[in-house]
Length: 268
Image 1 (spheres, rainbow, N blue to C red):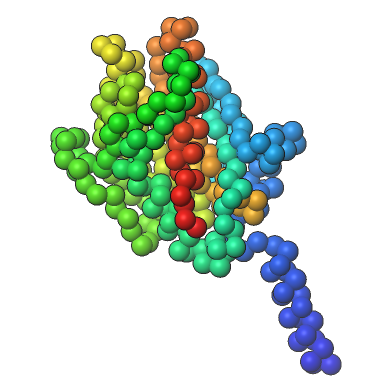
Image 2: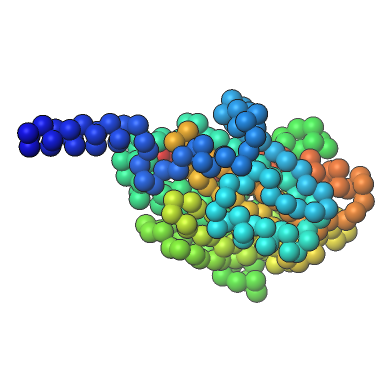
């Protein structure tokens, strides 16, 4: 009788492990439960959803979690008047490797997010020019805001700090030079970051976004259906119809470019 009982326990354990994902992996259905059935099906079939906010921002696509409050506080409380959300599903995510060694995989996911130098040279589709264009001519970590010309290496680490921040210099092909504060968070198993501009952003000679009025949030969620990548870009922009139309298309294509950058060569 005791042998039968032990065998039953083993069988139950094997069955449970084969049906349900590991503790570190989120259930896709739970992560997208806030979406409609049609939106869930679109995400599974097409791999992306986007939503445009004008004037008031209230997150539509973001999965629930501590990161949602940070994003709502950042974009909502600053009353940023234009925002684009994107939710993407990377189905080629190596779930087996992730579940076999989640800690190593999470470190790789984290390091990919903070490797800002690899953003240099990435391209996005320019709606105004109707062609692909380099997004960042320069992208690097810097010691502080007083030393934008001094570069620091990407801090490729072997651990997962709960929170860290550093400064970034970027040269955007459209908006020129700017410096930002980048903060990364680890809420097991979710990795997220926010980039907030620390200098004014200009289009040619015109100032279009004030200091601390542009936020870019990225959230990485490993699920049993693939890697969920959430992005939102929010800004307090000029309320000029033509400019906002351009900003709308530009923001959407930029978050798509950030997603393409992130999942490219993850090596998981």
